[in-house]
Length: 312
Image (cartoon, rainbow, N blue to C red; front, side):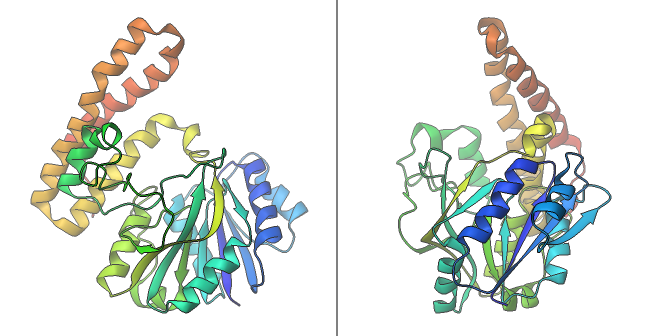
């Protein structure tokens, strides 16, 4: 078996249907299996998979176990030389799976390989980024990477200056399409399930690199990533969780002092945005629903960043 494609699903029925269809249509000349891990969906996703894709290995969870734990369940039964973590809100294009496998075969130190990711309008989605750091968190808090996207300094964390058009070693490959060598997993271990959602791939890539494996971006294949489809169902919790997961990463790998500074930077990130969204409530009535979500999330985020215990 060349590759085991693992798709974690939570209430994305139509997206999942299209994703699986694209995998079977565009996998290319590789021997592959597809494993769907469903996190207690209530939208008929499980029934659809059983009916429309009977060849899929289906794991049904009684509750939402999160992205890391669900992928680990898939890896426990996977038979492939590679494991491909693929989001349910993606479409595989142009034999991307086979092309990426061929690339990884030619680069035996590549523990993780990512492909080119497109937005629905076929523009480049800027996947791949640097590991979190105090400097990167400070720049991100002030949105300097958006003000100066061509700057290699201000855009360093998100690599905003790079067109994703060449092969290069990176810190983190985004988890929407993440081809991982089984040999590397056997050495490093599976995803850390303390990361319920977000930063789990960051932690994984960090551990791979610490053990001498390369994390490589290779534009040898393409996918479309719609992005944030499951997260949109719980927007407040998603905004907070994203930042708290970064704090968990900092606490785990950089120690207590860096974690303390990171807490204040995270609170600063939220606090800097509150006045903007408060002004939206006053002057843009049509955006008040979105503003209310942001205000709730950022207010709760400040409290969580400063006072919520973060396990690592």
